[in-house]
Length: 161
Image 1 (spheres, rainbow, N blue to C red):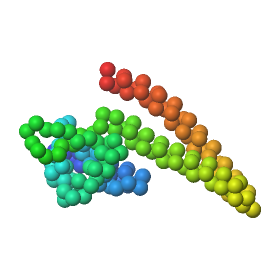
Image 2 (cartoon, helix red, strand yellow; image 1 turned 90 degrees about the vertical axis):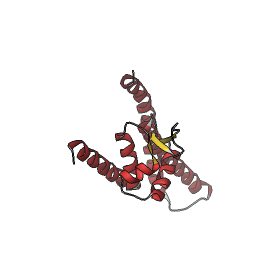
Image 3 (cartoon, rainbow, N blue to C red; image 1 turned 90 degrees about the horizontal axis):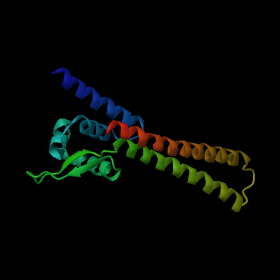
Image 4 (cartoon, one colour; image 1 turned 135 degrees about the horizontal axis):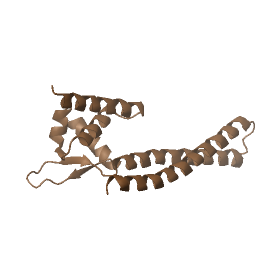
């Protein structure tokens, strides 16, 4: 095995572990890593072959990754197979997906704060304080994430001049 092949294997394995640490499928991380590492779009069959996996689970994962805006299916003029590559905004889209979870947590906090008030729940001071903390935390996080995305747009333009 060449050094480049070893590096590719390490990269794919590490991405799988990173995805798993976020509660996602290790295979999802492997597919994303393979597509980051690969210069050309590759077929579903080649993805499965490269990862030593069967085509079924890889097909399900590619569908989920497409739905999240992380990879895209591309047309190949010489084949009827499905080919895939990363979305140009892969990292930004992953960040936006995470930000959707943050906004959802913010909605949960606000919803249950209003439920405590509208239902006139007694002895809920601790829960109410925790929900206030939760709301403030996620509101601040959302504010900083918006600022981060604005800064990222500037940085990304520098990379792809």
